[in-house]
Image 1 (cartoon, rainbow, N blue to C red):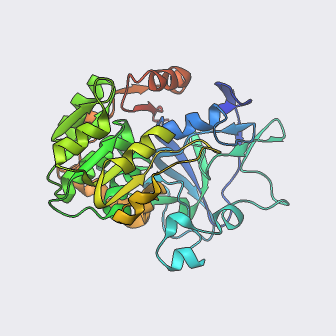
Image 2 (image 1 turned 180 degrees about the vertical axis):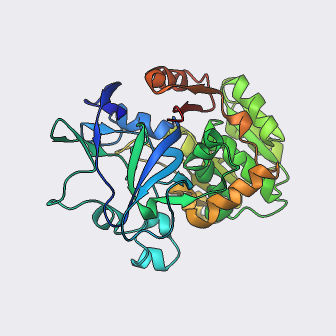
Length: 364
């Protein structure tokens, strides 16, 4: 099969022929239909997060089941599925406590052992699987607990977005922060995850939803998604502006950029008793500083891993929201591209030209 391989860090992706194995007892072979280009992949390409080469990146995807292992009963060939990096074992303390996104055993129990052939290879050399998925390829071979079965009426290019960005943004609002009706919200960063957080705030019934970004086109799109106010951080002091708009600060601030400065700003935007939730992937080694005295005001700074999701439950619900017209996904797909155009897709992302580019694979 054809796949986009990361051979060096930092580096671009190279389109190569790669071998993929047959499903083991609890594995599922999927024909990839669509894969979103997410900023998280770029972090690994640029070396901001550790990566082992060669590897096939990609983790925001949807496709069709082609074959299943002997012990798989959840899906069968022909089923439509979304994959999720929040693969779970189902029996560790985090899973049994309901925190599937924090599963303690995914990196030991959901992978093939040292004595087994690799899922992915190239001329006899192991190709590393990325986040249990590797969706920048024509096919994926994954553990059955890394996917969810979905309604066949759901378009694949929109379903792929739910695999990461949408679930991360909505989940941060619904599950991590538990935004209540009538509360005020600020979202810093209006890419795919930030736009999803804005939509989550709208669906949750927030009164004031303030979008913060430096790109006018993204702020315009944020208004389509439900933002009641926009702040161009290139022109004004974002913290002061948010505080003025809300009479002292928001109940909830969401950081969807992944930078030290914006994470600190999210905390500074809070009213007393407010909560700042960092969604963005802040580079390894970066320290976040807050003014200690503000903790006396019972402000909270927390993180969110993939929206604290329970994806087998959450993703079908998000699809229902989309099909009912409550969740806007069509507007978030700025461009559809081919696998051969993947590096151009990442360049568009770096330049802030798109909310989301989605790779669409041929039907056969």
